[in-house]
Image 1 (cartoon, rainbow, N blue to C red):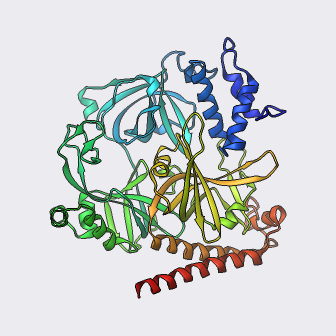
Image 2: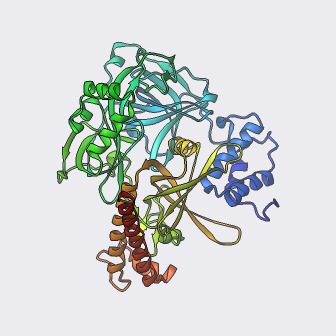
Image 3: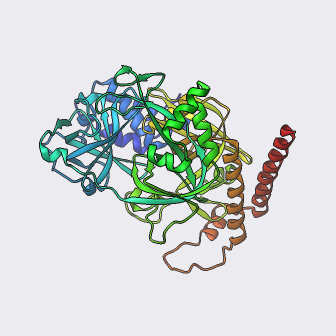
Length: 521
């Protein structure tokens, strides 16, 4: 591959970060960066990280060796978690380990959630840190850690400049982790794998779910039964991952853990419990509330139906990272949304894609058939997914900075129905074309009913946008933009074509229902 005639700004800035005594060729950095962006369709920020990590490894350097990245200029200030405002802040924090998550990335030693009285934050302990192992419910002083941000969510990184020190005094044992309960209401559109009757490791301070009778930490053990539900609740605009513990699952399904164990014993198969749970709750509407821990709303209270209170804090509110509502959009329209913009001059202002139907979208919620997954990475895995819907194909990309989504794509067996919530991303090729993709926050395996429900609701929302499309209608507020007028200026959209798109999607849905009826006969 020929080196580009000009050096991309991102590659030049990256080259400037390397120490003066390291002979790093700017052209080599540019070539690798351009290869990732142009050939492998890697978003630019991910290409910067991948290129940086490649040359750090090639020259035997650590992240904190880069100019402006070192945390070795003395101990970082003691901070509370709630005071972390953005990326690249060096700090020390005393916190309790709330939860540790399974991790398939070789370069990451541990990943989980830590918290203090002011709130919680994700923590990533890199292998290069050579730090002591942390355990759930343990309290530690995380010294000289650096904040990072991805998908509007902050985290702290433990690297080679950091240290982890156990805190053993009595005050530490009584540390209470602050959280804000949130509420969500909607229909259960998916019951995720890992639901039903599971076995957990009986080891002290270990609650890991066993896989084939083995704990990732303690090896082969005799597990203890537990009952849980991991589900996706859809409110018509976005989808939320929710987790029911044993007590909440028993209240939700009416199945006690003893009944679940008996069901599994009679069938010699624990999957019958998950099937029974799915049959009981799939398609039903619930209002749930509880704290957000990691990617899940952990349910403390649940009522059937939509009983959301007027003053409820929703998972899309500031209590959960101030996330934008995920918009439903068909592939044909999404792939035509090649223009992006921000509504603020702030450094971390959200980036929106402008849909041709006159709607802005920072996050999207799509459902379709996963037909193919490909690792298109070079020095680290980077998964490309083809997700086919009734009007076209979505492309989604997940790598080491989206370990949960990458793990799903790595292990998924195509074809399968999947529900994806993520950020809309655009990138320009050398030919001047703009390609559109999704950087997933979550990927869940769903069933055909979940896919059909998404098609029907997306058709309704798209029709509503098209019917309301009026580029001549002045905005109610001078600070607001007329997105319909923007769409006309940028795309000159053929509304008849998009109306036909909706009709084709509904025809596809109707044909599927007819085929299912014939199969039943």
